[in-house]
Image (cartoon, rainbow, N blue to C red; front, side):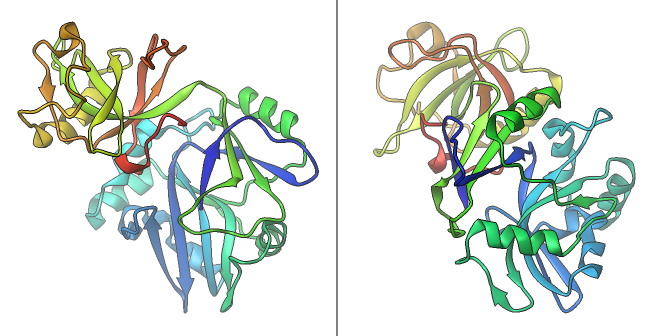
Length: 306
């Protein structure tokens, strides 16, 4: 189940959780065995061996949550997590689990001891999840709160990404982006698809980003040069260079000449999260900077709603 972006809803019909900046994962536990699955359905069990003993605390369950890597201040670091996300070699995964361990933040319960819970209201699923008493060095069930503004303020004080508001009477709707879950970010950010880049003082001087149109082209949203440090640049080059193409994926004549000059075009498959100030009347981003890559989000899910 996916959330929409919007203002903080209010009222007794809503509960509030912290929004964790990590990678969504389902934990399927049955007969003493556990598998982890990413949002795409790819099995990611091998990447996080420190989570496998969760199966010792519950015999049959399907859990939904977020894999995060907490820094020394206790704040999630998506940049640090990127080192863990694609590891499949058992030896390397074990080494990283010891040096930079992740934490699984569990926030929903979809199956318990053979009973399918997705049709039950969030309030009931949450009560059953809390009753399991799950807790360990590498996983937790973070609290849910009744007050939206107080939760939002606390998220800001803790340096977290924002708040998730959930309608307490809503069922779980797999694969659906539902208004029953609302994500409220503390920063003005959006996800955009990379259609190319321009060289600069570094190999990547600026990304050319947009949002998909129904006809398969990208609507141009601007050039993003801020935030591209050495680590993100290496990650971007690794993803973008194999996607090189001779043709621009943007609408004809849409990219200004000064942005298109010397551009390296790519097939639009890479999604980045961008922080920006405002939009110009034609939808271009003002004062944008790259926050991170979004390997968990496919391009077809990107739109101007964030």
